[in-house]
Image (cartoon, rainbow, N blue to C red; front, side, top):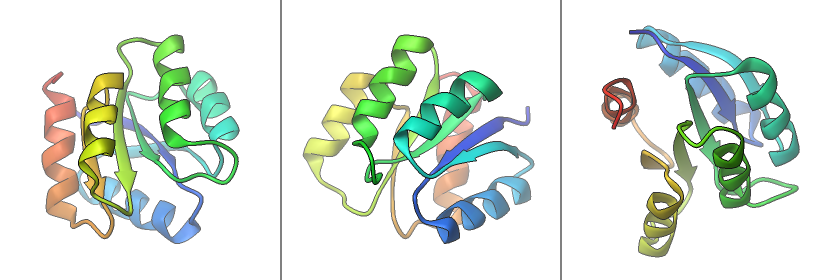
Length: 122
């Protein structure tokens, strides 16, 4: 089933790349944001099925954004994206309820695997 996705990343090239990957996998980017505040606003406005969320944002930490999203919708599906693969980040992300972590640069196949997890409800 196609997912409606909110893409959150402060780098426009990452947002463009994610949009292209999502569309090639049959999903739709319904909104995008480059700051944490905009992400929270867009999450409420667009009601996406899934959020791809960069951990490093200019105004707030991605983990703080994830917490806000979870307060708004405890069942929200969020994939974190990071430039760094620290075990601490992975553990923290899972504790807050992220369904996966992609480390930049990631391949389309890696995104596809995490999206399948999201579609199946895990």
